[in-house]
Image (cartoon, rainbow, N blue to C red):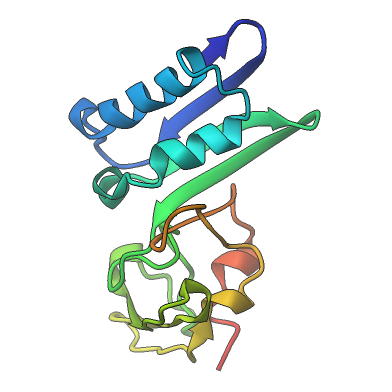
Length: 172
């Protein structure tokens, strides 16, 4: 948790199985410099600026940020869009197969890249039950947001609802 001059609080968490200090230290220092030396006060802007180049970190761990915005507690998760193993920065979606309770590692993602990340299309395939979703256009998913200054990092409010985790199973 970072607390600066009574102005605000922010909690930053890493959700990887084994998040090593060498993977997070540069981004943590960047955040602290922005809050203390540069005196930035907008928490979300600091997070976006500090993490927009953090692909190495986000390959191992999503980042969860808890902070207060407009008198409301916000919890957001930032993740790397990295098909075939991960889509839209989300650690795990549900499989669309009937009675399939597969693990995230069994889900694979195909994509049709586009210069505009919102126009990219993604499809999920389950290696356990062979269910394949229809193509989903990133811009059609209203709860996922491109991290400012990035083309492969997305954020969403955390935790996801069951409907959000079923985005690939409710189409096609």
